[in-house]
Amino acid sequence: MPVKIRLQRHGKKGKPFYWIVAADSRAKRDGKYLDKIGVYNPNTNPATIELDVDGAVKWLQNGAQPTDTARAILSYKGALLKKHLAVGVRKGALTEEEAEKKFQAWLEEKEGKINSKKENLTKDQQAARAKALEAEKEVNAKREAEAKGTEEETAADENYEGAAVTEGNEPEANVEKEVDTETADEAATEEKKNA
Image (cartoon, rainbow, N blue to C red; front, side, top):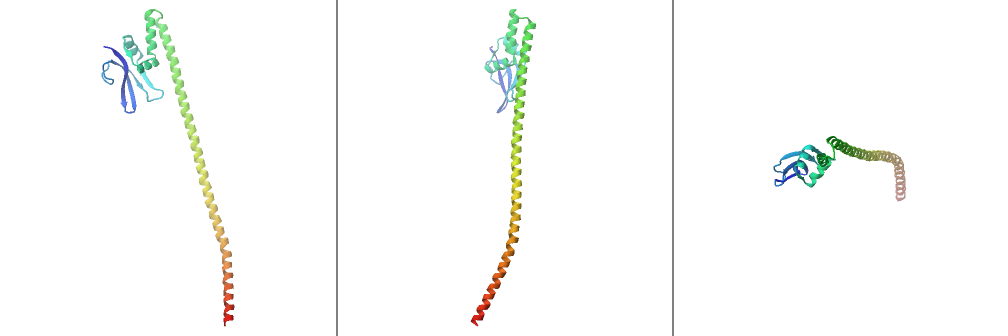
């Protein structure tokens, strides 16, 4: 019975969530499996991977063949390195303590890389938020300035129209009175001529 270490899909449509399993290669993708080794969630950044490294190494030593994606995940979490070191211990090239020291040093280096990536992502997110906030503040300031400017223009227009009405009415009223008196005088002179 050939055993594969592969991903088993779970989760809803568009949001996949995978189990890392050791399964018979003839079984369906999401069917029966022999052992659940870990989980893989690609929806987060960086991807969340929880893996039983010792269980994966046990299956690899017993001849299980990982798929390409599973191999990348096992390599990322150090299961392939631990298997390699275990082979070295079995052949006598290393002692168990030396192999464990090498593996722990590799894990610490990997954790440092992952943490630096997370820090860079949070810095980038904070910078993007700050930039968006500044842009929003500029837009709000422009809106306030435009609103203030239109209020001042309407107030000035009202004052100007009010001044024009008061100034314009007085001369027009005087002109109308003068015209009325002139027409009345002309009418009176014509009546005298006609009479």
